[in-house]
Length: 104
Image (tube, rainbow, N blue to C red; front, side, top):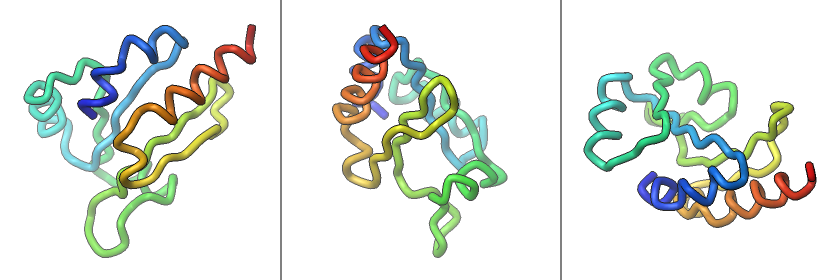
């Protein structure tokens, strides 16, 4: 998340809204966001409904697999990065840039 925060201006230039989702409580997420300096929303999926629907809930442990989704304004998933790839915002930013240029 720190890498996405560091690149937040690049995402904002493409009209992109960055959101984080965690299976931790809203209180834990708020404390974590403050601790690492994240300014974008960090949402709680404490019931695991979202992570289950997106197919990223770990079967063995009650956590989600680290995943980045780029979802366009029509709600269509345009790109997915998983695990280590999801830590680096460059792929997601490239897709967001491409989507921004397509609409012009």
